[in-house]
Image (tube, rainbow, N blue to C red; front, top):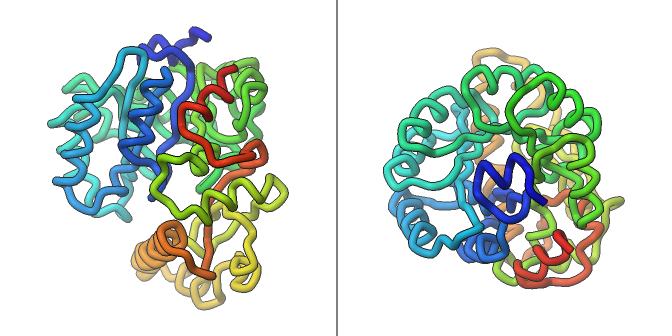
Amino acid sequence: MATKLTELLQIKHPIIQAPMFLVSNVAMVQEAMKGGIAGCIPALNYRTLDELRDALKLLKRTKVNGGAFGFNLIVNKSNVKYKEQLKVICEEGCDFIITSLGSPEETINQAHRVGIKVFCDVTDLNFAKKVEGLGADAIIAVNNEAGGHRGNISPKELIETISKNCEIPVISAGGVGCKADIDKMLGYGAAGVSVGSPFIASEEANVTNEYKQACVDYGAEDIVITERISGTPCTVINTPYVQKIGTKSTWIENLLNKNKKLKKWVKMIRFSIGMNTTKNAATKATYKTVWVAGPSIEHTNAILPVKEIIKKLVN
Protein backbone atom coordinates (compact mmCIF):
# COMPACT_ATOMS: atom_id res chain seq x y z
CA MET A 1 0.00 0.00 0.00
CA ALA A 2 2.55 2.57 -1.12
CA THR A 3 1.07 6.09 -1.07
CA LYS A 4 2.26 9.66 -0.65
CA LEU A 5 1.91 9.21 3.13
CA THR A 6 4.12 6.10 3.23
CA GLU A 7 6.72 8.03 1.21
CA LEU A 8 6.45 11.10 3.40
CA LEU A 9 6.97 9.23 6.69
CA GLN A 10 8.87 6.19 5.36
CA ILE A 11 6.30 3.78 6.81
CA LYS A 12 5.04 0.44 5.50
CA HIS A 13 1.30 1.10 5.74
CA PRO A 14 -0.55 4.42 5.13
CA ILE A 15 -1.96 4.58 8.66
CA ILE A 16 -1.50 7.00 11.54
CA GLN A 17 -2.53 5.80 15.00
CA ALA A 18 -4.47 8.95 15.86
CA PRO A 19 -3.62 11.07 18.92
CA MET A 20 -6.28 10.53 21.57
CA PHE A 21 -6.55 12.57 24.76
CA LEU A 22 -5.74 10.40 27.80
CA VAL A 23 -5.59 7.23 25.68
CA SER A 24 -2.46 7.46 23.50
CA ASN A 25 0.85 6.65 25.16
CA VAL A 26 4.45 5.64 24.45
CA ALA A 27 3.72 1.89 24.61
CA MET A 28 0.97 2.21 21.98
CA VAL A 29 3.20 4.23 19.66
CA GLN A 30 6.10 1.81 20.07
CA GLU A 31 3.83 -1.05 18.99
CA ALA A 32 2.48 1.08 16.15
CA MET A 33 6.00 1.60 14.82
CA LYS A 34 6.77 -2.13 15.12
CA GLY A 35 3.63 -2.74 13.04
CA GLY A 36 4.84 -0.46 10.27
CA ILE A 37 2.55 2.51 10.87
CA ALA A 38 2.91 5.94 12.46
CA GLY A 39 1.82 6.73 16.02
CA CYS A 40 0.91 10.08 17.55
CA ILE A 41 0.37 11.30 21.12
CA PRO A 42 -1.32 14.53 22.28
CA ALA A 43 1.24 16.73 24.04
CA LEU A 44 -1.51 17.46 26.58
CA ASN A 45 -1.32 13.85 27.78
CA TYR A 46 1.75 14.97 29.74
CA ARG A 47 1.26 17.16 32.79
CA THR A 48 4.77 18.61 32.69
CA LEU A 49 7.31 19.54 30.04
CA ASP A 50 9.82 17.15 31.60
CA GLU A 51 7.39 14.26 31.10
CA LEU A 52 6.90 15.30 27.48
CA ARG A 53 10.66 15.51 26.94
CA ASP A 54 11.16 12.05 28.48
CA ALA A 55 8.53 10.57 26.14
CA LEU A 56 10.25 12.12 23.11
CA LYS A 57 13.63 10.76 24.16
CA LEU A 58 12.26 7.27 24.75
CA LEU A 59 10.48 7.15 21.39
CA LYS A 60 13.63 8.32 19.60
CA ARG A 61 15.64 5.54 21.27
CA THR A 62 13.10 2.86 20.42
CA LYS A 63 12.15 3.99 16.91
CA VAL A 64 12.20 1.16 14.36
CA ASN A 65 12.57 1.19 10.59
CA GLY A 66 9.25 1.34 8.82
CA GLY A 67 7.58 3.25 11.63
CA ALA A 68 7.28 6.92 12.58
CA PHE A 69 6.11 8.92 15.58
CA GLY A 70 4.70 12.37 16.19
CA PHE A 71 2.91 14.60 18.66
CA ASN A 72 -0.36 16.52 18.49
CA LEU A 73 -0.53 20.17 19.52
CA ILE A 74 -3.65 22.19 20.34
CA VAL A 75 -2.56 25.52 18.87
CA ASN A 76 -5.26 27.89 20.09
CA LYS A 77 -5.45 30.03 23.25
CA SER A 78 -7.21 27.33 25.28
CA ASN A 79 -3.85 25.54 25.50
CA VAL A 80 -1.66 27.81 27.61
CA LYS A 81 1.19 25.26 27.36
CA TYR A 82 1.31 25.31 23.57
CA LYS A 83 4.43 27.42 22.95
CA GLU A 84 6.50 25.62 25.57
CA GLN A 85 5.36 22.24 24.25
CA LEU A 86 6.32 23.25 20.71
CA LYS A 87 9.75 24.34 21.91
CA VAL A 88 10.41 21.00 23.65
CA ILE A 89 9.25 19.00 20.63
CA CYS A 90 11.48 21.00 18.29
CA GLU A 91 14.44 20.64 20.65
CA GLU A 92 14.10 16.87 20.96
CA GLY A 93 12.78 16.11 17.48
CA CYS A 94 10.18 13.73 16.03
CA ASP A 95 8.91 12.79 12.57
CA PHE A 96 5.79 14.95 12.48
CA ILE A 97 3.44 17.22 14.40
CA ILE A 98 -0.34 17.28 13.99
CA THR A 99 -1.93 20.66 14.75
CA SER A 100 -5.53 21.10 15.92
CA LEU A 101 -7.97 23.90 16.75
CA GLY A 102 -6.07 27.00 15.64
CA SER A 103 -3.61 28.56 13.21
CA PRO A 104 -0.61 26.28 12.54
CA GLU A 105 1.60 29.07 11.19
CA GLU A 106 4.00 29.31 14.13
CA THR A 107 4.22 25.52 14.44
CA ILE A 108 4.99 25.11 10.73
CA ASN A 109 7.70 27.76 10.79
CA GLN A 110 9.47 26.39 13.87
CA ALA A 111 9.07 22.71 13.03
CA HIS A 112 10.38 23.09 9.48
CA ARG A 113 13.55 24.74 10.79
CA VAL A 114 14.46 21.46 12.50
CA GLY A 115 13.16 19.09 9.84
CA ILE A 116 9.85 18.11 11.45
CA LYS A 117 6.86 17.70 9.12
CA VAL A 118 3.53 19.31 10.03
CA PHE A 119 0.09 17.88 9.29
CA CYS A 120 -2.95 20.05 10.04
CA ASP A 121 -6.47 19.08 11.10
CA VAL A 122 -9.11 20.69 8.87
CA THR A 123 -12.84 20.17 8.41
CA ASP A 124 -13.42 21.88 5.06
CA LEU A 125 -11.74 23.12 1.87
CA ASN A 126 -11.38 26.69 3.13
CA PHE A 127 -9.12 25.64 6.02
CA ALA A 128 -7.33 23.10 3.83
CA LYS A 129 -6.27 25.81 1.39
CA LYS A 130 -5.21 28.07 4.26
CA VAL A 131 -2.88 25.51 5.82
CA GLU A 132 -1.49 24.55 2.43
CA GLY A 133 -0.70 28.22 1.86
CA LEU A 134 1.12 28.31 5.21
CA GLY A 135 3.36 25.43 4.15
CA ALA A 136 1.76 22.38 5.76
CA ASP A 137 3.16 19.03 4.58
CA ALA A 138 -0.20 17.24 4.61
CA ILE A 139 -3.84 17.76 5.51
CA ILE A 140 -5.76 15.71 8.09
CA ALA A 141 -9.31 15.82 6.71
CA VAL A 142 -11.58 15.34 9.75
CA ASN A 143 -14.93 14.07 8.50
CA ASN A 144 -18.36 13.54 10.06
CA GLU A 145 -17.56 9.96 11.07
CA ALA A 146 -14.57 10.91 13.27
CA GLY A 147 -14.47 10.35 17.01
CA GLY A 148 -14.06 13.26 19.42
CA HIS A 149 -14.27 16.68 17.77
CA ARG A 150 -15.52 15.71 14.33
CA GLY A 151 -16.28 17.58 11.13
CA ASN A 152 -19.58 18.02 9.31
CA ILE A 153 -18.79 16.66 5.84
CA SER A 154 -18.88 13.04 4.68
CA PRO A 155 -15.55 11.27 4.03
CA LYS A 156 -16.16 10.96 0.29
CA GLU A 157 -17.12 14.59 -0.26
CA LEU A 158 -14.37 15.95 1.99
CA ILE A 159 -11.54 13.85 0.53
CA GLU A 160 -12.55 14.38 -3.09
CA THR A 161 -13.07 18.14 -2.67
CA ILE A 162 -9.75 18.74 -0.93
CA SER A 163 -7.80 16.38 -3.21
CA LYS A 164 -9.02 18.18 -6.31
CA ASN A 165 -8.15 21.63 -4.96
CA CYS A 166 -4.94 21.07 -3.00
CA GLU A 167 -1.54 19.71 -4.00
CA ILE A 168 -0.38 18.27 -0.68
CA PRO A 169 -1.44 14.78 0.54
CA VAL A 170 -4.83 14.32 2.21
CA ILE A 171 -5.09 11.98 5.21
CA SER A 172 -8.64 10.96 6.06
CA ALA A 173 -9.67 10.99 9.74
CA GLY A 174 -12.86 9.23 10.75
CA GLY A 175 -14.89 6.17 9.85
CA VAL A 176 -12.08 3.62 9.62
CA GLY A 177 -12.39 0.41 11.60
CA CYS A 178 -11.35 -2.28 9.12
CA LYS A 179 -9.35 -2.91 5.92
CA ALA A 180 -12.40 -2.27 3.70
CA ASP A 181 -12.76 1.22 5.20
CA ILE A 182 -9.10 2.01 4.42
CA ASP A 183 -9.52 0.84 0.82
CA LYS A 184 -12.61 3.03 0.53
CA MET A 185 -10.80 6.16 1.77
CA LEU A 186 -7.82 5.53 -0.53
CA GLY A 187 -10.29 5.05 -3.37
CA TYR A 188 -11.71 8.51 -2.72
CA GLY A 189 -8.22 9.97 -3.16
CA ALA A 190 -6.75 9.94 0.36
CA ALA A 191 -3.03 9.28 0.76
CA GLY A 192 -3.65 7.56 4.09
CA VAL A 193 -5.91 7.36 7.12
CA SER A 194 -5.82 8.44 10.75
CA VAL A 195 -7.36 5.76 12.99
CA GLY A 196 -8.23 6.38 16.64
CA SER A 197 -11.23 4.64 18.24
CA PRO A 198 -10.25 1.03 17.36
CA PHE A 199 -7.07 1.51 19.42
CA ILE A 200 -8.93 2.50 22.61
CA ALA A 201 -9.66 -1.16 23.28
CA SER A 202 -5.98 -2.09 23.12
CA GLU A 203 -4.08 -3.83 25.90
CA GLU A 204 -1.50 -1.02 25.88
CA ALA A 205 -4.00 1.84 26.41
CA ASN A 206 -3.85 3.37 29.91
CA VAL A 207 -7.61 3.62 30.38
CA THR A 208 -9.95 1.52 32.48
CA ASN A 209 -11.09 -1.89 31.34
CA GLU A 210 -14.63 -0.50 31.60
CA TYR A 211 -13.81 2.08 28.90
CA LYS A 212 -12.18 -0.56 26.70
CA GLN A 213 -15.07 -2.99 27.19
CA ALA A 214 -17.57 -0.24 26.33
CA CYS A 215 -15.89 0.04 22.92
CA VAL A 216 -16.47 -3.70 22.50
CA ASP A 217 -20.06 -3.74 23.80
CA TYR A 218 -21.39 -0.61 22.09
CA GLY A 219 -21.56 0.08 18.35
CA ALA A 220 -21.94 2.83 15.77
CA GLU A 221 -25.60 3.39 16.63
CA ASP A 222 -24.61 4.15 20.25
CA ILE A 223 -22.48 7.17 19.38
CA VAL A 224 -24.03 10.58 20.08
CA ILE A 225 -22.80 14.16 19.87
CA THR A 226 -22.54 16.16 23.09
CA GLU A 227 -21.77 19.80 23.84
CA ARG A 228 -21.27 19.09 27.53
CA ILE A 229 -17.53 18.26 27.46
CA SER A 230 -15.74 21.21 25.90
CA GLY A 231 -18.55 23.37 24.58
CA THR A 232 -17.67 22.14 21.09
CA PRO A 233 -19.65 19.19 19.69
CA CYS A 234 -17.89 15.93 20.56
CA THR A 235 -18.80 12.28 19.96
CA VAL A 236 -19.27 10.01 22.99
CA ILE A 237 -20.77 6.63 23.82
CA ASN A 238 -24.41 7.05 24.83
CA THR A 239 -24.13 5.58 28.32
CA PRO A 240 -26.92 5.90 30.92
CA TYR A 241 -25.03 8.80 32.51
CA VAL A 242 -24.81 10.68 29.19
CA GLN A 243 -28.54 10.10 28.73
CA LYS A 244 -29.16 11.46 32.22
CA ILE A 245 -27.20 14.73 31.86
CA GLY A 246 -28.22 15.36 28.25
CA THR A 247 -26.05 16.44 25.33
CA LYS A 248 -26.87 20.14 24.97
CA SER A 249 -25.17 23.10 26.63
CA THR A 250 -27.09 24.58 29.57
CA TRP A 251 -29.08 27.79 29.13
CA ILE A 252 -26.58 29.74 31.21
CA GLU A 253 -23.66 28.51 29.06
CA ASN A 254 -25.52 29.58 25.94
CA LEU A 255 -26.23 32.97 27.48
CA LEU A 256 -22.60 33.54 28.50
CA ASN A 257 -21.34 32.42 25.08
CA LYS A 258 -23.29 35.29 23.52
CA ASN A 259 -21.33 37.83 25.59
CA LYS A 260 -18.26 38.83 23.56
CA LYS A 261 -16.24 39.84 26.64
CA LEU A 262 -16.93 36.62 28.53
CA LYS A 263 -17.04 34.12 25.66
CA LYS A 264 -13.29 33.33 25.66
CA TRP A 265 -13.16 32.74 29.42
CA VAL A 266 -16.33 30.65 29.43
CA LYS A 267 -14.86 28.47 26.69
CA MET A 268 -11.60 27.98 28.61
CA ILE A 269 -13.44 27.09 31.83
CA ARG A 270 -15.82 24.74 29.99
CA PHE A 271 -12.84 23.07 28.28
CA SER A 272 -11.05 22.58 31.63
CA ILE A 273 -14.13 21.13 33.35
CA GLY A 274 -14.85 18.87 30.39
CA MET A 275 -11.31 17.52 30.25
CA ASN A 276 -11.41 16.70 33.97
CA THR A 277 -14.73 14.89 33.48
CA THR A 278 -13.27 12.89 30.59
CA LYS A 279 -10.13 12.10 32.59
CA ASN A 280 -12.13 10.77 35.54
CA ALA A 281 -14.25 8.59 33.25
CA ALA A 282 -11.19 7.23 31.44
CA THR A 283 -9.04 6.50 34.48
CA LYS A 284 -11.51 5.61 37.26
CA ALA A 285 -14.35 3.15 37.59
CA THR A 286 -17.29 5.50 38.10
CA TYR A 287 -20.94 5.74 37.14
CA LYS A 288 -20.17 9.18 35.67
CA THR A 289 -18.98 7.74 32.39
CA VAL A 290 -18.33 10.12 29.51
CA TRP A 291 -16.36 7.95 27.12
CA VAL A 292 -15.19 9.62 23.93
CA ALA A 293 -15.29 7.36 20.85
CA GLY A 294 -16.31 7.33 17.21
CA PRO A 295 -18.64 5.07 15.20
CA SER A 296 -15.71 2.94 14.01
CA ILE A 297 -15.96 1.01 17.32
CA GLU A 298 -18.56 -0.96 15.37
CA HIS A 299 -15.68 -3.19 14.27
CA THR A 300 -14.19 -3.61 17.77
CA ASN A 301 -15.03 -7.11 18.99
CA ALA A 302 -12.40 -7.72 21.66
CA ILE A 303 -9.65 -6.05 23.70
CA LEU A 304 -6.48 -6.84 21.74
CA PRO A 305 -2.79 -5.90 21.61
CA VAL A 306 -2.00 -2.99 19.28
CA LYS A 307 -0.14 -5.35 16.92
CA GLU A 308 -3.29 -7.44 16.44
CA ILE A 309 -5.43 -4.35 15.77
CA ILE A 310 -2.93 -3.29 13.09
CA LYS A 311 -3.10 -6.76 11.50
CA LYS A 312 -6.90 -6.47 11.32
CA LEU A 313 -6.55 -3.10 9.60
CA VAL A 314 -4.00 -4.13 6.96
CA ASN A 315 -4.98 -7.75 6.20
